[in-house]
View 1 (cartoon, helix red, strand yellow):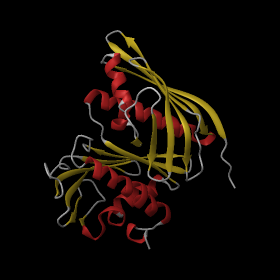
View 2 (tube, rainbow, N blue to C red):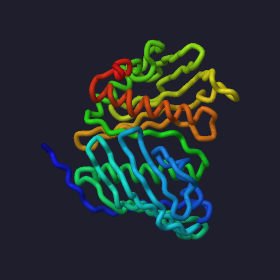
View 3 (cartoon, one colour):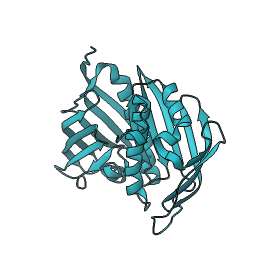
Length: 291
């Protein structure tokens, strides 16, 4: 039986942002808007305690231990668990340091803690994506698209095929019609009286990336704009890490400012982290999960 060994690491990512230190700090501290896990807790401040989690399988309690407005924010993980392999990163620090860089701000993020020896590459990938893509995008546009990331003990080919060939088994159910395999294919998901959306495949890179553009939509339960999904994109990005596949899902355009964000983000968490994960891992379609 394989035994995972821990190693101490200190990995740093730096970006330069054309905004003031105060502005950048405020964006960083607004964790609920951009951190790629569900945030539970009060607004970040001195001694704030909060929870970060992904579904029921990835959980951490955290406490702010350094809070210097415009300059530095550090939180310490005080309790944690990833149930899939019992990974525990308690004692790890997430450090954000800001300094002036001419008319811009240098933001330095440091992960200071533990990782499994064979997952250092995955840690680097996640840190780089979180800071360079998610946080940078939020700071520069004020928007944070919904994201979900899972790891699956299957090859990218297996995951890619499940996403493209078996949409009905993990998302659409019996209310799906159309094709979802090739570039420019279109499919519709229609739950009468609740949800209608039409997707077109606008990017397909075998075993690496799939992008769906929502060309039409109606979410009947919304009060203000029932077409909020129209012109948004669902993006599936796959990468191999040892014997695992990392799937990063983004619903581009699904941002906290939208009326549907709360319900849809909860829905996507279930669809990606439960339905899709179980289909690829155990070949269990969504309609069998509760039987």
